[in-house]
Image (cartoon, rainbow, N blue to C red; front, side):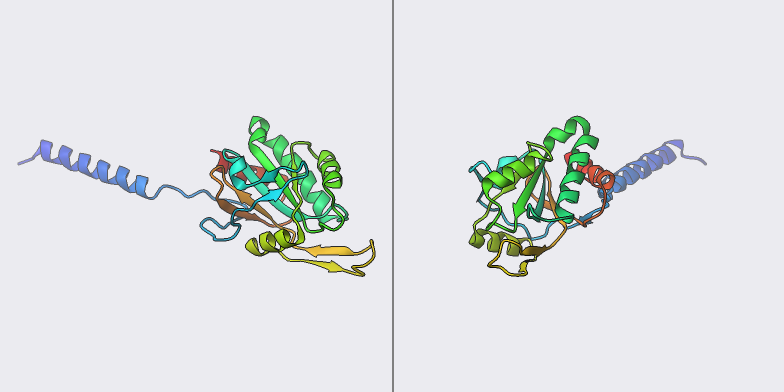
Length: 198
């Protein structure tokens, strides 16, 4: 004897179970950058930008923030990274307006607000530079586990700065999500940011 209603009921239960399982195992986004979601690094800060305005992460809610530590006299890593961020913004199309790069100087001795403003304008006037005091720099660098050190005669104007070369990406809710290795490339980074904006 067959029970058509029972088999139909069985199929419905099976289908419902499969749908629930699919919902539970929803795919996590796959990034080209290193996923540091849930990390304690990168606590909030309050540092003046090159316009003299105190900036905090909360100021950029709804945007993806890319934070990079560098200095204006850097010969290679810094201009390459900033140029890459210009390309990332272009690749994002209209969503490029929801990208906020923050350049934190590791050389507050030489990088004046005026110099940083001109440096940002070379790339994109919407990009912001943060101008920490030496004490603020020590705090924010420790929070992000960033290395920086003067190399050469600190008393002369010709010293250089050794510094970490990666960037940190915050989602639109202000949570640190990604660490971007130097040299990743504009396209993979733009794809990662597009996922965070969705």
